[in-house]
Amino acid sequence: MPRDDEAFGIAGDIIRADVAIKSTPRRRPLNDAVSTTDWLGRTRRDEDEITLGAIQRLAATLDQDPSVFRRGGDMPESWYAILFGPIARESTIGPDGHPETGDFLPPLHGTRRMFAGRRTKFVKPLVIGETVTRVSTVTRAEPKSGRTGPFTLVTVTHDISGPSGLALTEEQDLVYRAGVEAGTAASQREAAKSDDEPAWAKPIELDPVLVFRYCALTFNAHRIHYDLPYARDVEGYPALVMNGGLTALLLIEAARPHLPRPIAALAIRAMSPLFIGQRISCNGRLAGDAAALWASGPDGGLAYRVDVTLAGAAA
Image 1 (cartoon, rainbow, N blue to C red):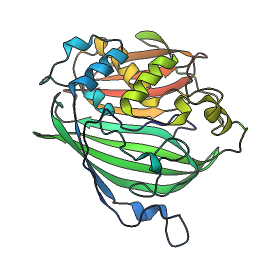
Image 2: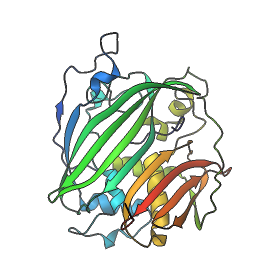
Image 3: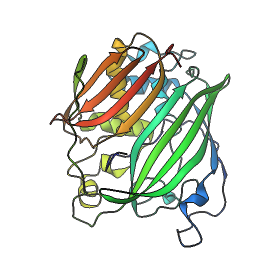
């Protein structure tokens, strides 16, 4: 399980959304009678549109030609990450910029939210211009302890469908850690070096405009990505934090020219934080029906890993 890392959620450029939440009381504080396990099995249904404008803006953000995308064409499989942005009223946003927990997700107020990883299986393409639905279920919510102290691990399973049926299933892991004392540094370990020898490597500068455009597109208001005093003084980071979802997309798009077949599945792990202003390397290599992708920081440390399974691989 990764350590202190950037937050990432499935988010997107939303035209409309209908949400039906099968839950009971809102924002109940945890106490002896209420535990995170009470949220197991909770479901939520969201609706979104795959708008041409959103796809073209993401293409531009990734430095690709937006004009090649048209209504009725397939959306690149990993780009589903821009869908289903949190539609939360301003009055329900917490101090960190995320919607307050306690409704669909367990009430973990005053904690630091971090993206840990996700595993996705693709069934069929999503089509630009279509309306899609997502059914989300809390499948794990349990307290744990690691080298940097206690945390709560929450896993949410998302089933995303288009008009022709199920398109993909994703399991997403979120970690909630206790806040740090104001003005102190968050506990972090040194990133391990990768033993893999890359077949390709693409250097990328993590500039603030790139991260701002992606956060705006995905409606991600987590303050660690744009509010330096907050990131440094409240969450204990040394600089603004790179968006984890954007890191995954940069790795996949750097690898796409080298992949002989479409992507059938992804397994993503956040391992150590990257920071805006750093120059990173997006690395990868093929191994049969799979590809290993990883992002290394300025010191060569392993920050992010994406394991790709290609379509047509043996079960």
